[in-house]
Image (spheres, rainbow, N blue to C red):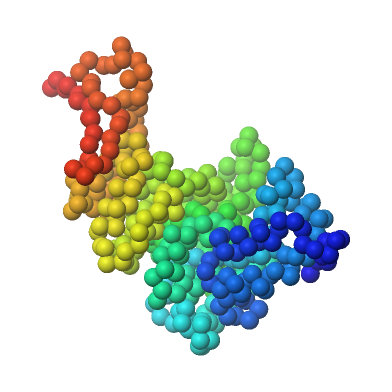
Length: 391
């Protein structure tokens, strides 16, 4: 532990930053690895407060750079109070629950390897959705679903366990790539480490999202070649999921490139119908009520929110069954897998209504409409282009 600042008191403002970080950016419950028990935010605050108070001005200088003082305070606190997240597919049986961990019942040994790997990244705190969420509390479950994307992004490292893989060549058969909740768990973290069967690392790099082989200057064509197991991981994921490298390494949530993001989700499944919508909350950076038992309506509610803010026509490029609540949207994201987005992009360039409105004199004869649409209580309201085709 570092010594206190020279005046014997904590650096001005650092406790406020620490408090905000713990109570606003960290999960409700975490595993305290030294004692292998669950702790809540209050306990985290009390455990780490002495260490935060001992942060010196010299410690702060290490995080100064081009950042503001407040940003530096946030970075030094995050460095002092790290936590790791675990991303994995649910096991069929034997995984500890929140109640198991709370009562110190046998079973937490299933998390031993995860916690060992977390400590290798200097983390004494860890979080797993299987045992760190009190699903008996609707308030805690709601908060976890709404904030989960942020928690994965805030974590010092996301540790991914691919139980069915020994190398990237096994990714096509790996269930982890077929689940709904693992999509935000892939996109949200700033740093990730992939482990395969028996917890063997799938690369030699400490951060598989930013492997050394990809750290070469952009104009170095050799950096784009598959020259190591590190780059193979990102390349294999891109080929399997259609998620481009820039999204894998620096994803920005929000309501843009909507069709592409819905297409990512279209090939995934969830155990609960409602989770297909709830797993996308963080990706689109929206908020919506969590109502299990809502069934297909949960997907409709998510699409209503997206349609209110999305102004891109390609959201209607889908095929298949319609939603029972609106003919304008598909029954599930699977509708977006049935339509080739690349062909629609070419079509949308041809029908770029925004440009046509600005250059009315160049509008092709017989083409009418605009790119504005809205969901109303009567359904979808929109103007559509009419194209006269002569056979």
